[in-house]
Length: 416
Image 1 (cartoon, rainbow, N blue to C red):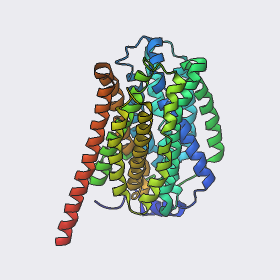
Image 2 (image 1 turned 180 degrees about the vertical axis):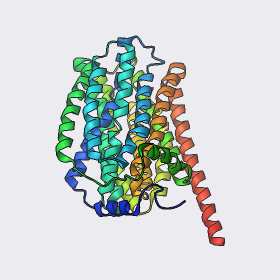
Image 3 (image 1 turned 120 degrees about the horizontal axis):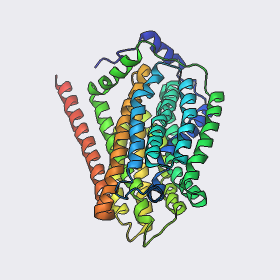
Image 4 (image 1 turned 90 degrees about the vertical axis):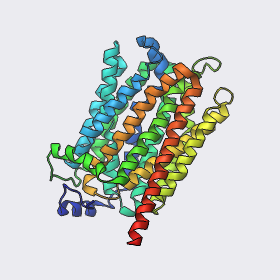
């Protein structure tokens, strides 16, 4: 495959190169915090599913649709909104999305019917892709030798946002009901829009070589013609199906007997997974050193082994916590490594690349959400654990097959 973007000019590539290295640590931290606060909006509902189920009279077997429709909205945003980062200045995109997110979140918090709830959640997911615009923004401005580390740092913010969201939402729900979670988030999102408007640079390099439709049409080509990106997309789908399997279904057994945990206590389990945030930056540094493939393989092996501990939930809470730490560490290590690899080429197309890649992530999250609640309804926690182990084992097999195929191609090239 031609190593140049099929849609960008050499002049634009030169502009991206001149911008590289201009990212300050302060801006990186602001982006990480913004990503954490924004991505939390997708996951606030997970510890609240039982309360939402009662409030809207939605059956427990189908309450996972609250998460699924959010991920559907997220997937749509990845395809139709994130690629705009290759066409217009990201600052405008980021601030606009964040402001609109505040409105959508407020709609969820005040919803009185099931249809308004689902419509609001879809819109929240649609606008939450501001996280990916920020990731691309930072990757464009980072020095090439530190790009993986920078992506890892910002991903750490994303991980903390995902995991802390469960504790935060549980705590607020116990204090003021599940609606208070979204009303608080709406206020924070409005404030965040003002902060980003003040902090983010007013101009960065963008590619104007393509129309919007031309940009959208180019996304599949970036994956269809590149086996590495296809594999990384498949891994994203599988690891986030695993991730969603655990975190969507976990509230169901913990909120009932013999545990009967409160929303705050259930949300606190997310704090155990913050260890994954520590792995994210480290995985990025390993990718910068050319060790991305073995980092992926080891992380996937850890992901599969985590389910042996998670499956012990009925008899051992400490084992569950150990499994949660291991699972989150492994998922984020693979995720950071995936992004480092897909950002390694086509600087003019990074928004399209991350949009296409994260579509796999969203599809996996949606699949895990509905599959896990269905599995729990019919087979209990044993079925959920088996489902998570299946997704994890499939990911490890995909990685092993891809490594084998790459070795065969290399040996044939050498022999010729």
